[in-house]
Image (cartoon, rainbow, N blue to C red):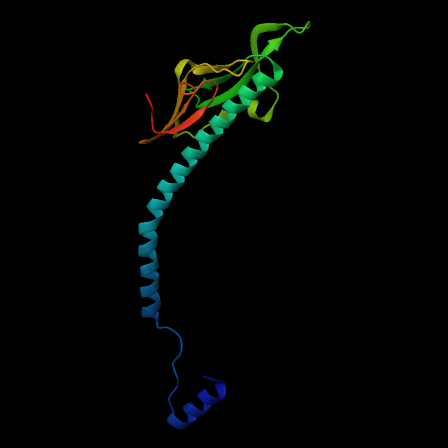
Length: 173
């Protein structure tokens, strides 16, 4: 309705035309929105928690693949060290002495993926033996790592396939 028509109607009838919402209507709509949010918010936090666990498992898998490619490319052994008590992991490479011969000692690598990675406090990180060895021929020590949050778990394993790392849904024993 145009403003001229409103003015004409006001003067003909003597009554104002109401437009807009009453306070009760606004409160009712706000209550409906709050009820919907109250139902949806707990589901969102569960979904976010699952996505975060999945991302952590994928990051661990990528770090293991990095350690494997480092071993192959440099022709030295590397290892992924897991500190279960601190919930962290990092890649280390075998040291070489001044003559280029390989030693039995390991040191943290210089790459971005060799820095310690801290998993979230509510994610439990478990590794058989605390480390996984990666050899220059591409083979990997056969072990399993578990990432769990409440009832949801992921298994990162090298036991199922030779020289490959698999990410499995659930805790595979």
